Image (tube, rainbow, N blue to C red; front, side, top):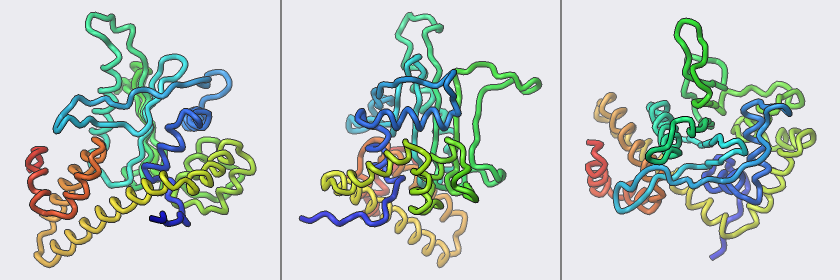
Length: 296
């Protein structure tokens, strides 16, 4: 069967994102992205990386594992976790800390001294506004002293980037970090990305790879499967809101949507895409899975 062409590429599509920044063939792009987002210069830039085992959560149900988007070990032992989040998650901070903790703690074998632990940096690209109280789009967190603001350790570093908040007034004057943020942001046009590529070799390489990706039928098929799943999720969300409005149950609607979102995100993290399809199509099965994950 002929795979439909991709006319307007969704760069936050899980399949495309992992293919672009999670591939050994393009690890130079991943290295550039990480150094740019972390604003590292020639004195402290990472110079190499290897992609690490992304299975960080123990087996839960049916032997499935939670998988990270992109996990890389840098040349100095630092681990960098990159994740894209397209669905609003009120517990994103909790979830981020949970995965950070799993990555950090798995480095230490029984009996090893704590000095063997290495820093873990998380970069979360969010396609929604997680922090409406801030006008800025990039937020960095450490563990710090409440009184003096001294950082306790460099072992914890978390970056939340709200892609929809970036304002592109002059595409030619963006910093390296902002260029990557603009590249992934849905607010950036294809023409603006071409302008970015004129002054940034990494963005140019990313655009070149887009052509290869959209001509690969196997990748395109996976891409469209993911897009369909996300459309189904949005359809379920909207239909739930409609039912809630008719029944006048605003709070119940909000809570139900939140719980269903948690279930779907968990299944997607565990690579259980077939289960996501069944949850969206069958209310009985949805109820069964909600109980199985102890969400109700």
